[in-house]
Amino acid sequence: MLAVINRFVLVTFSLIASQLIYCGTMISQLFILSSKGDHLIYKDFRGESGSDAVGIFYEKVTALTGDQPPVVMTHKDLHFIHIRQGGLYWVATTTEDTSPFTIIEFLNRLTALVKDYCGSLSEKSVQMNFALIYELLDEVVDYGYIQTTSSDVLKNFIQTEAVSSRPFSLFDLSNVGLFGAETQQSKVAPSSAATRPIQSSREQGGKSEIFVDVIERMSVVVGSNGVLLKADVEGEIRVKCYMPSCSEMRIGLNEEFSIGKSQLRGYGAAVRVDECSFHQAVRLDEFDTHRILRLCPSQGEQTVMQYQLSDDLPSAPPFRLFPTIERDNGGSSAINVCATIPVPKGSVSLSQELSSPDQSTELKPQSRAVVWQIPRFPGGTQLSALFKLEVPGLSSASMLEVGPVGLSFELPKFTATGLQIRFLRLSPIQPGPSQRWVRYVTHSDSYTIRI
Image (tube, rainbow, N blue to C red; front, side, top):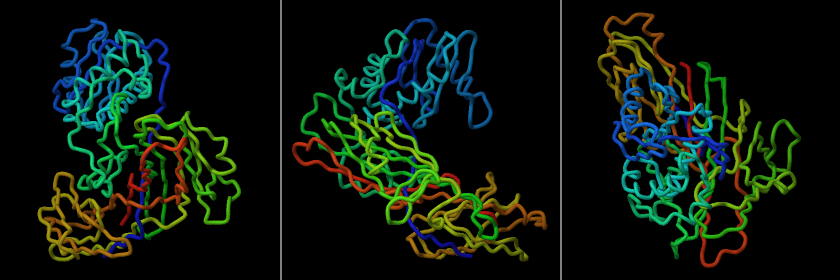
């Protein structure tokens, strides 16, 4: 009837190249819609289709059942290709038989570009920076043909200043959230670095800073007997640069860092991953011998390294759950931690005993689950809870509907693989004071405990 947390962690994943050749890909229109279908941005590059294409797209995407509508849809001779980022629809249309993967890649890079220049991806941010986004589109796409998505190239032409929804403050950097991580705990406030736009070529006197995040995402399945059945980690090293000029950055990893089943390196505890990939701008001439990554960071955000580890964690999982389920006159009981627990159909009421007042529970009949929220769970501590459900017509079969338990969490200052940043060096030496920030976080991607 209790759960134990051992540690704290950090995690996330993506890879964006600075430039891409699009081989003649042609786009007719590009527009951004809110989740309610409001027109935020609309650009017609070729005049081949009317503005009613926006309404047609929204009708088609909302008429479909399920949470994942097709990325590519067709109406007569017009093809709609879209992605969802920041709660918005980013849509491109074309009348050509163009590779949809090329346009999807472009849309993903466009969202990254808008995030770099506006500071964040949200309906409010797009509304406040519509002039800046239209200026970006004028430079990125010419008569439907994609030109560049490089922030280093565009910063020489973009003149519109970004409008931030809130002022940047270094006092906010102690927050748990990461500028790159889409945290699953909405109550955790993200760092202000997440919403800070890059500097334009005309800005002077801005703070010279660079942020490095080591982000990992865990997928774990624990059997009903407590045995670890599956443990996968996907991680990345993400850099967000606010340096006006930096010719080279050197990132030193653990000397014991190894890839695959190769022989161990160094004299400390082994840090091993199964697979590893790097951004195209990373130079690896010192990686094999000294585990040093060299690159010339561009302004904005980029993922310099991605890695993966499967079924061989160097340490115990951060959470363990010890459940007890009993049947009495009123119903069943279950114990969980920071969890969503499926319960029998027809559960009508819930009573609980919690180990601390800051915890909360809720019975959600529609999703047939009990949700136990724990705002803060210090490492090395134990929390317990007793839930009592009223289930009319309870049967033995109803008892089998309890579980499995799903956990969602964010653990700062920890990586499941043990990956660490040994040093972060910049050259040439930056004029004036410069700040370098390194943070670690692990998120739950899919953390399941069977009961």
